[in-house]
Image (cartoon, rainbow, N blue to C red):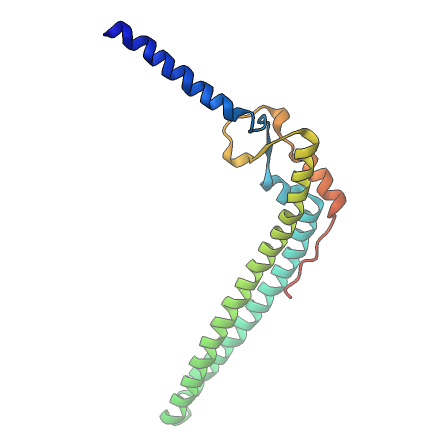
Length: 182
């Protein structure tokens, strides 16, 4: 019985491989390239210009927040000074008004910081949107069927990395992007 099983197993394996080979003609030969998106988002001309613009916007926003923080603190200190001079009922009304103003200010401050994050994300998305057609063009030129992000690859040959070529093409296509708070 054992001797009969070996040929049957061999026949099944051959049939399975032939079945897989029948479908192999429908799939292209696989060629892989690697791209480092983080490097593109830091070293391309558009990314460097966007970073410079963003840092200016960030600095301006932070200085406005610091100034507003000072004003809110001054208003609080004035309120504390008035506590001993005005009637308790009048102080209570002013204290409640200040608390409402402080809460509104905190919400406004958080919105400014969120908008700042949005500016950076919008710039990154614009760069990545321009990278996609470049990757498609390069994949056709090089006959590449799969492009992997470098952070997800453990080991690859250095000649598989097309990042420098992507950056060159991106620098020609998109040397600068507009970065603003809208």
